Image (tube, helix red, strand yellow):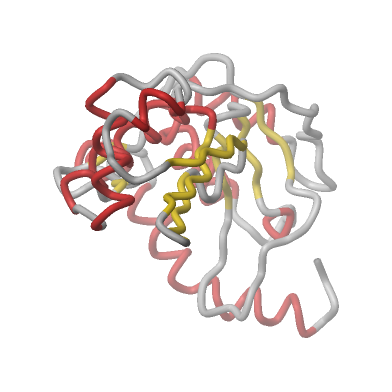
Length: 218
């Protein structure tokens, strides 16, 4: 691979391979030599991608950046990771039962669900109610929702929202920007039977969760 890259530039090239998902490409030019740290996803990359790597490394070419991001997006969207089991049984709500109910209107396959080990409350300017890990095919729901003061329809909506991520995958536009909530995602989200009620409760929930924190509740 280093030889293939070397053929694309007159500058001597040194490559270090890694598996860091956060930074899949880093570049340094020093003493007339090009140093590249590349994720292993590029190890068997086709020639057009290698050309893009060199163009980006040499002059930060925007079109090359898009090619590189598309290659990375394709790789990671197809990558699965062995997942630890999740616990869906909470003090009040059983997420597996809710998941099974939502399955009746939104069938998904090979997805597990459970409560997050820690509540994601942040500064209360925003709250992450749930996440979908596409690599592990897992939905984690914020344990702050495990209370009888949270209406069942709202929790169902959050589960439905995260299940939609398994059905409507992230896409990349022409500029290389990842679109998590696509037009199709937004359209299908509104098909949830109690969409309006759930969104209205969500607007009011900030005060509710603030009070829970002030009383020392998770």
